[in-house]
Image: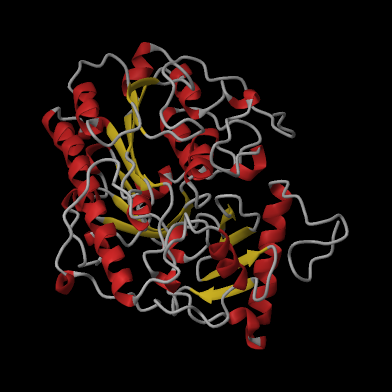
Length: 455
């Protein structure tokens, strides 16, 4: 596949040994399909995540972090290429990275900057496991949660003569997909709790009466992904229970890595970044899985633990995209100039200054193409107070929510005249973003955004 309009600078110059020793190690722990609220440190008493909580206590927690795309392959492609996935033809799972980018990924840049780059676990761009000696990485464990933490511990226990970039890609709580399909869970089944111990339903369990109808249409097309259409309330409670137990299961695995960091005294010169590629509906709006732009799906965990545990326990409200902004931040810590043509904004200074009032970026965007053959596209643009959602077709395809008063997205302000000016402003923001990222319109004479003239 040829990729247009991509210009990248030459790879970084290998630093001197003295400079390399000053660079921090970077450990990247990423789960799959974990919504931001699925941690006890976020005030959720339906689960207990002592190790994620430990990271939050030692680091900086970003409450308004969003995925680049709510689908595994495209989300991870953004993390490791620095481009929005649709911008470089990576909008769906199973799509390989274009040849023009294969030697210009984050791993390659880090390797050229003097880092030992190690990958363990899920890759999914496009193969399940990271191919050994490709994309700048040495692979020490395939796509499997079984034994992944132990492989990472074994690496951390080795003697290191240069800084390292270690990626630990866990699959859970993604096994909720197999559970919903009544299949065995890949990394071992877990014990269910008695019904009277299942969590209750979320406050936004009901659908917004002015929700985009294309979401229900996409749900009807794909029984494999959405076998929950006829779930009873108790079915949803059991789903939520199993989901939270899977989060606890992966939390225990993460704990093994944190214990190794403790034992090897690595905190003093290591940046630990914890996040997830996207979330899960968890029953909100009767939704399971990803693809839709509901808050539970696109708002993901992001915790950054700095060397020496600087700013431990701080929380930040600024907007962060954990795809393109992650790429920019890792380059920032590694002393790599961001390649030309990339637009991610590093969150390093936010973590290091830990000032909630610090101005960062006015908005971020999550884009989607529905999974499993669906053809609906959509965009969620988040500003400090509002979230604007646009799908490319259907009734009520335009949504606007006040995220201070209505984080559950139950009142669509796009249909109310008094919010017209706010709606128009958010349309303009999305229009600017689409131009910057070369988003193709429906037709030359029809712009995707309502009220915006084709150019």
